[in-house]
Picture (tube, rainbow, N blue to C red):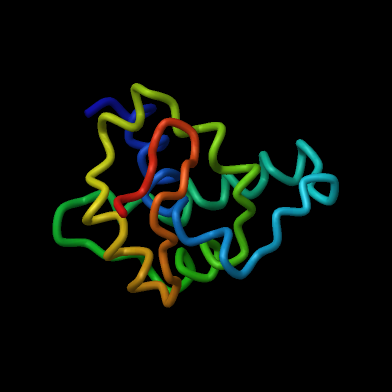
Length: 112
């Protein structure tokens, strides 16, 4: 897996859990804030893509504060093909977040 693809997968591994607690206040998140948020997800959650690895406490903290409008644009069809949805859901739930069913984020819809 290429490094750039891996970084996109990191972001997507964590996308499901961000909208149930954090409101979707799109007007309140600037492009520069989104860029910082995605960068923090990428940097702090990098190890979560490795088999057998779970998100760190800091990664989970960042996931809980993330905004869907910042993360979902990165879920392209190419990235969606790289995401193991069931593993992703388990990781997000491991961060203490519930994952909504039938939610569309970018090119992925969570299972019913």
